[in-house]
Length: 50
Image (cartoon, rainbow, N blue to C red; front, top):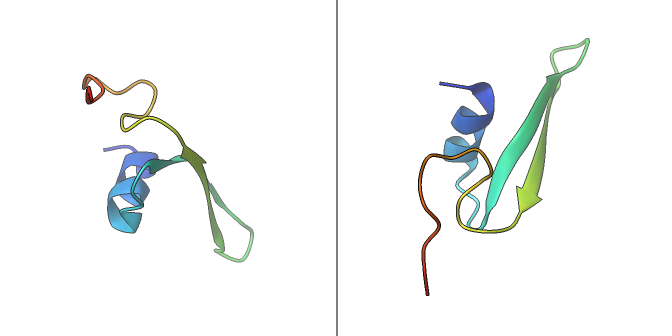
């Protein structure tokens, strides 16, 4: 499992996913999130239709 997928699952932010994770020199973790469709880019699932 990719670290971005793991953080997305841990954070459970509706309508958002983690697109990048950086670990700083002191062990600080920075997770960049993105808002958008219910399925992040590169996912194998089809988006939900309304």
